[in-house]
Image 1: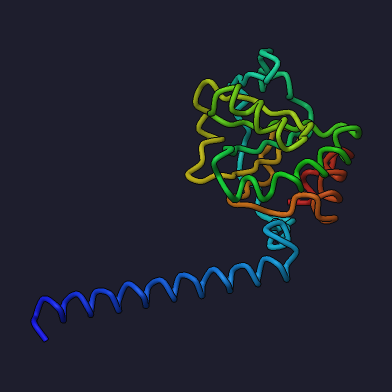
Image 2: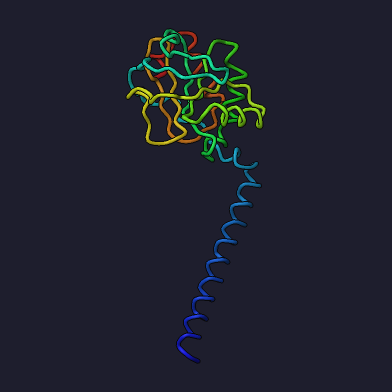
Length: 196
């Protein structure tokens, strides 16, 4: 067998081996997703309680899909659930239904939800419509203040009425978990110190 034929045979065998490994990985992933109830079934609740992160910097304005600006300073004195995300981010998309359910449960009780992405309003509007979400989504037209800067998305900040970032969570999570609901209700009743 010529050297060029051996190289082709070895290269072909390597390509087949890689394809088999990738297909095997896909089968394993599909099995895990099916057994866990799909991608959302892989979510875990964030650690509650965890160490407080620091003071909130309210010097930031975001724009709603209706074109109206929201100045974060107008949210002083409120419990705020702030999620920084993007439509192209798979973990963001996986956790979004749990945020929608949390919003439906706690927005009527007074928790303010702000879901901010640096994408344009048209992209965000299409995503919200296509997924039947009703939660408040905003386009971040400027960089967030240093207290809200993050190296990863999704990142979620929970802000207490006294202006403290009492939770900062990087990565996806199951936000409608009973521990989170209880924690946010505690903040509504003025309990930031006892939960941190």
